[in-house]
Amino acid sequence: MNKTFVSVWKYVALSCLLFFSIILPVSAASNTTIIYGEKLSEDQREEVRKTLDIAEDDTYEEHDVTGQDYADFIDGNPNANMYSSAGITLESSGTGLDVNILTPDNITEVSREMYMNALLTAGAENATVDVVSPVQVSGHSALTGIYKAYDVEGEDLEPERMELANDELEVATDLADNEDVSDEDVSTLLTEIKKMIAEQNPATREEVEQIVNEQLNNLEIQLNDADREMLIDLVNKMRDLDIDFGAMRDQLEDITNDLVERAEDLGLDRGFWERVANFFSDIFRSIANFFGG
Image (cartoon, rainbow, N blue to C red):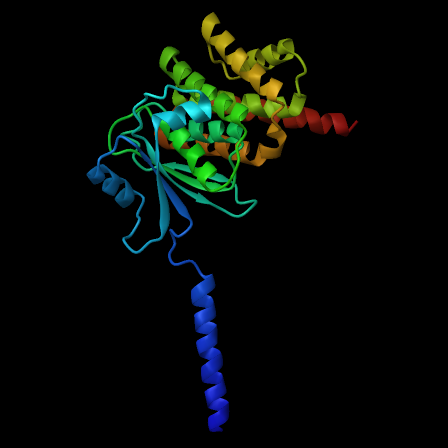
């Protein structure tokens, strides 16, 4: 083989190697942002990194979420102790939102679906979010940490929607705590209410109240008057902000499907999930009949 030809190909091969070494990520975690609760010790921060499966040679950004962030993002208490942490990887457009709780025994109040619902309300999208805490916490402060990750990555979320999402998380955990309903029931209720907002586009508080009451009746969930009003107030704020839940219908369907699968795995109330399936089957049948004449 011609020596000049061989030399040229060696040069081409070396150039390609250098080119791809530049454009490819240094590691799988190179576009990951880690947000630590500011009260964590260095040992606890190392535990967070291990739980997130971050290796020593991985490239990532890291920041603290503080009580002042809590105040700045959602008008919370600036003196709050922040322990919940998260690893956030922003994904390409159209990927969707995926949330995982990596330390479920230490996140005592907020479920994966509650985070999903709240983050969709906040306008977060196209990200993989891993929530972790080395100590037992409610999990509420993780939401502020996720907001901070979006902020440092230059992704703007609307302040009003962030505050509303925090309100939603508070309502969800309050309902699960105060009423005889499970986390799964509460998440399903909120998800289906959002679907109905997308379907009906309510123009008044009265129409919002009708949607809430219909969903409570269809899912056979009993709330006391105070909690019912709290839920109606929350949904009415969603209406006021004119959030396009129709644009996130696929993500809402994913939440419902995940809840159904988990209910089967946990052996939860089979009748409840049959009512969910039957109710939406009836809706789609009615729509089909309408267009069929």
